[in-house]
Length: 276
Image 1 (cartoon, rainbow, N blue to C red):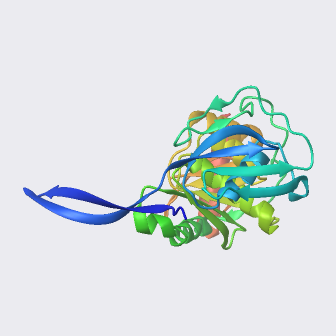
Image 2 (image 1 turned 120 degrees about the horizontal axis):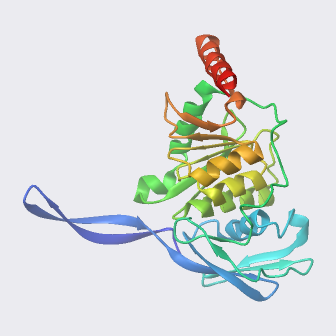
Image 3 (image 1 turned 180 degrees about the vertical axis):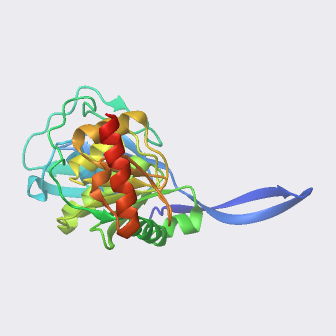
């Protein structure tokens, strides 16, 4: 059985002394995706929730919409291939675009195309105080990270608690795993917030839009293209989220503020509108 962590031995040099240590590190391995008997691509990933990774990738690429389209999904006995059989034919993309995702993500989606969804009319709000609480819940869900380090975590929340979490060496893989978990477990909350430890790049933003999440927040930074895409999609993009602070890069009106915080945000927005 392939496990997501592997025992290692290493030497540490500290204060002019060498020490021998035993530890565990995160596993990275190639896993191929076969659709209707044809190999489509190879993921570089961590071997956990691999069937969900395959299903979520196909969903986020627009190949499937529901589990009703999936006749069977199986991880091979060696753990290096996921076989997906659909109830319909599926055309393999002619080319895959290399993304900025960790471990080399790929997509066939045109990230610069006009979006087919827009969350501008979505009135859901998240309280500013809840952002830090969700980040802390994300930390609590990082079981692999606590054992090995070097791994990304993403989670789906309904605004109050984390419903699903997934870990992988590739940040883009974590969102595909979340999508696959939603499909297999039938979890589709009305309110959807995605939280991640990884940088928000364009493909991460595209996956969030595909998963109908009007709020995407991260422990780290967004890229310039992800901010532009968030504005086009009407997604609230939050970065550098900590317990008591965070940055809002797009659609700040979806973040709710209480008391003096609401008044200060209203003043900031009003000045910005007046200046424009």
